[in-house]
Image (tube, rainbow over all chains, first blue to last red; front, side, top):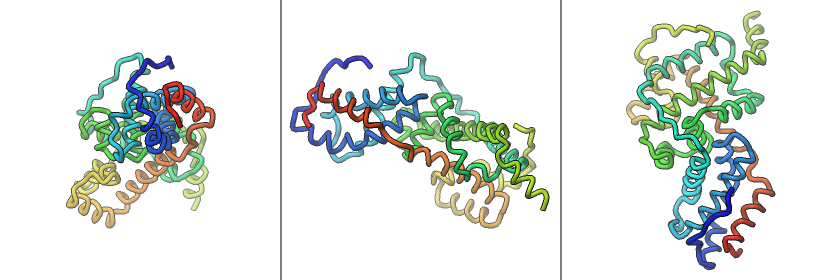
Length: 201
Length: 88
């Protein structure tokens, strides 16, 4: 990251509140940054940039409000700025296609004996990889709602889109992750033995 | 995909298919939620589909429990903040 150009840094008296309200969220901001970026080093940079920008803008923060949410918004903006490409757009008129796609994923899981796939502990690394490999804006939407447990309204505000767009992005993103996990399970032979056992009964 | 086909579904099952995420994310009206809940209690296939989707969300949510910032990142953040004038 470049050395920041200042400023509006808070006066010394505000440092205590910054330390008390903002810094405890470093773990969450890092995890969120990791969900947005594709590697730990980039996540470090984004998290560091987030706290620098937060510190410089601390005077705009309303004490006692949702600091984590405020930091996530800064983090998301820092991430967007780190991207050189333009923010992609999403066609939100494809819900029907996604409904069919989601049903196909489940039908395939049922047919191939993978219905318990997501309850397996050993699938977590594959889930993490599948989410990280999602294209934007699906990755950020899932990171905010599904990983950081923020409501649709917060995600819509953070990403600057209507709630309906959040909904369609989640629908699409989740389906894509499920498809990738199903492909992973096939590659690894996960669940096959269980299915064979069931069939032998 | 494996070429799996979706069988023709009754309207109640189709509603679950379309709204299972909204249901799990608590985005539906009370009336619709109750209608889906009643159908899920009666339809084994839809209940299994809901469980499949629920397990998926649970697994993704578990990613939020990953290790947080490293000590090195903490040190870097504090160092850069102090460079900005942060005194604590």
